[in-house]
Length: 458
Image (cartoon, rainbow, N blue to C red; front, side, top):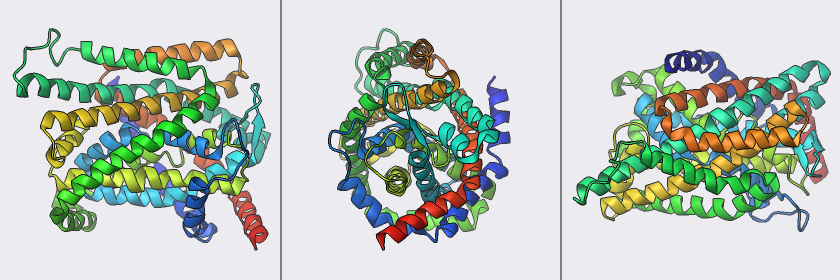
């Protein structure tokens, strides 16, 4: 099964898909005359000084935090380390490039999400690619929207939302237990440090904690995310900035190595294609620009215009990749941490924070657990929205799906870490194809709506 998934991943995440993602983002930037970049100050103002309907069931800020809760996860702490191990320091450059082009993709997704949406059975606005593909392109493209919904429901249940998050937390816990039992010379734990018992406990706890949110829908998740996401992101950024300040003498050499790796990848040991694929794929995994997930949350926002929501949505790429992923990569590089996955991040924090090793690794575990938990509940909304599009929103089917979702979270520690990351990448790629295709076909409408907004401002 792992070999099959690896073959699928290599086939999907080849140059055609990378060119589609980067090319579409660059095309939109040029088509919009760099509007997303020029409007960054306005976008930040809309985030921190939101205007909207008071007592809105889902505010624009809440929708953004819901999108961030699903994107700011293990990809920021684990995926960055994996990208660096596969593609060398230059992978960080390609990750940033994918984020810059991702601004226009995120903007387009948020705009289309509000432009083409409808009320669901609960009276909330609902939409996303499954709505703007048939409504914007017409009935002949209806199957393209259904294909996205199928891949989205699969990704929520068997990929990004469950296996990857719990698997990464389990790996982090294994490293923490090893540190606890060997460095402190305490009595060996009854189940050992390599037994799946500890991971199963983590999966069950995450499943139980998430269960109360799974059936609350977008409204409950958005309100919780608006409280917890700024806190967890702030704590993580403070830790990274602290480490970079302590290792500030190493920063010039690290930045030089990043650009050297881009210009001469063979000298670093990572080929050009390896660096590009590692950087772009992990960047997309982290910020989800072009995947079509963020517009599902954006469509539920109340009190904003399509262009305003597009601007708000694109700030997720700033917070997620340009800030959090960049700082994570720099922390790993300045501390000289090696390896892939959560082990490299734990080692970087252990070396960088002026704390005992056990305390530093405990901080990584707690932050990673928070990131994983918010991603689990955020992706439950995405998977449910895709399922509702396929089934017409039948409550019984939704309950079965969410029950399976919680069960998958509980059993995720029993799966291979490599296999689950590969499966997640496959699902991401499958979702991106119909969504980015629709964005390209709707680029005229995106440009027209943006021009109308600018004329109105003038």
